[in-house]
Image (cartoon, rainbow, N blue to C red; front, side, top):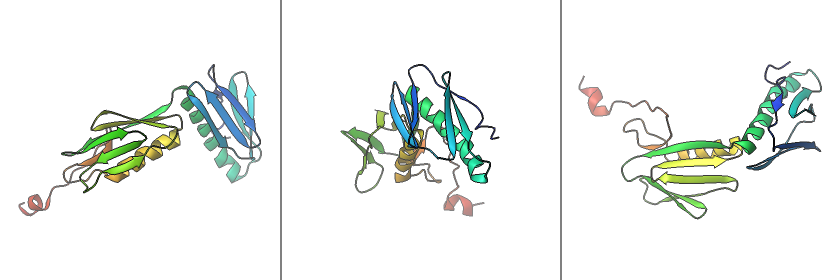
Length: 181
């Protein structure tokens, strides 16, 4: 039995979980998420808890057991609390602006970079050098944060670029510093 897969998932009040035709629907106060799930698993709903049971003992069944339990728990947490990632922009003249459904990044290129904000994701810019990405789908929030960071990842010499809040960038010494030793 999978250590993660055998744990029940508590369903808070106000959250509905339904499994029909290979689709799992989780609906809560922040929205609803749907995801296909494997026919190699069974879901049991009892007393405000969801139990994930596997059909067989093959290697694939065992690997899917813990995975889908974690995905369902993330869906439940997403529709109740939501997820967020924070990015900071470091560099002289580097900034971000929200214009309608676009994020405009000015990060030292000859042109501003336009990033279309997908549906289900909210991006806020409390400061010109700070971004907060929010949503109910953990995967989508992380993916969008990674795509924005990939526009100008932090470089190791001056530390300029877009990074996660709290991310440590190890700085290298420059060519001039290395030759004077």
